[in-house]
Length: 95
Image (cartoon, rainbow, N blue to C red; front, side):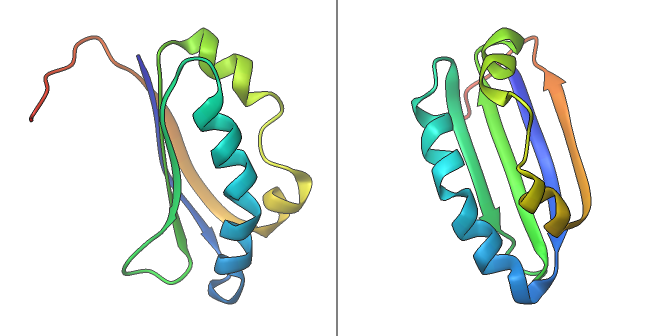
């Protein structure tokens, strides 16, 4: 399993429009083979922060979906980004 997690920072005045532009990506990801979870959300405390969380069955399914990454418009709107991939060796359910 692969987890992609982190956050992006955008101008707080443009965060809602940035997130609106991500709706299609979230919908596509959630229907992609190997996607276990995918979300891009507004942070509850920081007005310019967008949290990213993805969970994939494998590196191969992630790469098949990922393609070239964010659009040029989305990339230009990001002031900073701190997102990383994590290879998960074991999982314990908490529920």
